[in-house]
Image (cartoon, rainbow, N blue to C red; front, side, top):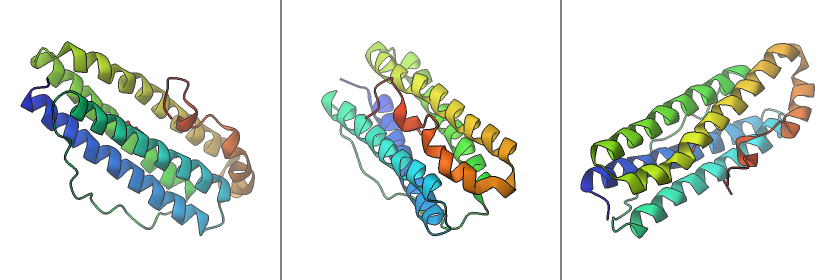
Amino acid sequence: MITEKVENILNRQVNREAYSSLLYLSMASWAETHGYPGVAGWLYAQAEEEKDHMLRFVHYINDRGGKAGIEGIEQPPREFEGIKPLFEQVLKHEQFITRSINEIVTVCIEEQDHTTNNWVQWFVSEQIEEESNVQEILDRLNLVGEHNLYMFDRDILSLRGPGSSESGSE
Ligand code: OFO
């Protein structure tokens, strides 16, 4: 059984993972219509992964005697200034999600909920990988420069994406 405080912060994360999925879907659609099929493919896969993250939270809350509540999700942006600003925005968003997961750990410790703390550690590790994957993409973008985006777009799917994590994301 989870306490109300733990239930509330886990439900907040349901909403944030859902927003992450919509944000990456919106970015994917933008990339697809601006001539970047590789970037779009990477982002569509990422949007799916965020949906899986959301479902993990939904099932965990319900399995532990809570009630997962689905709320209205904020509208993500529809326009982006270019490929590099887009990935900078992805990194910023993942850093925000990392802080959000860390806040869950803090609440688990305060509530002495060792079970949820143990369960959420999967996300703690996942966030290290997600941030590092996006950083790698930004490093690659800095190397190829704005004039070689065709090559970057062609190669991006061979980079380890967050969806290729071995730590168990589906
Ligand atoms: Fe991209 O992260 Fe979910 O958790």
